[in-house]
Image: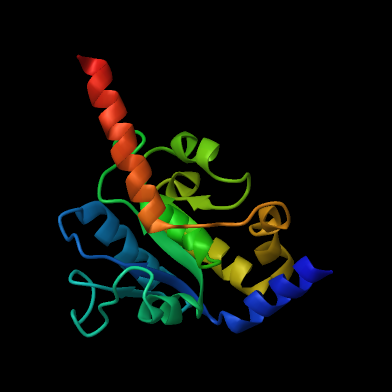
Length: 184
């Protein structure tokens, strides 16, 4: 009952479609996907950053009240990586989960994401091939259908997202040191 209430609240509070914060303009393919999605969908899809709007008007630092405020109004987050190399999955993907959004992943192949995310918790561009109109139609269907929206959040009944940047940085540095000492 608590989960259903959470889904109902999130579904009704989040009236906008997909959000994207982007500052690296070098990755043209992801900018193209964003542009095509924006023109293919009736949802309010917004992008903020140097590449897509009047930067720095909508600049928000990571995990700031500003970022939280933007994220609270959308159902989806465009977790578009600047690199499509295998295993290149950054905080963009996890941040969507943290802010209760459904990530739409673009970067490495879907099978790179699957071991890192709960089953059925995200969409991947690969699922739609080059058919952005189908992706847009699917997003609109999720946006209108509370039951379908809830399916992407079903995993929240068993898991929660905790992001502690300070703790993660220590772990990354320890892992780096460990790997470097093993090379010798």
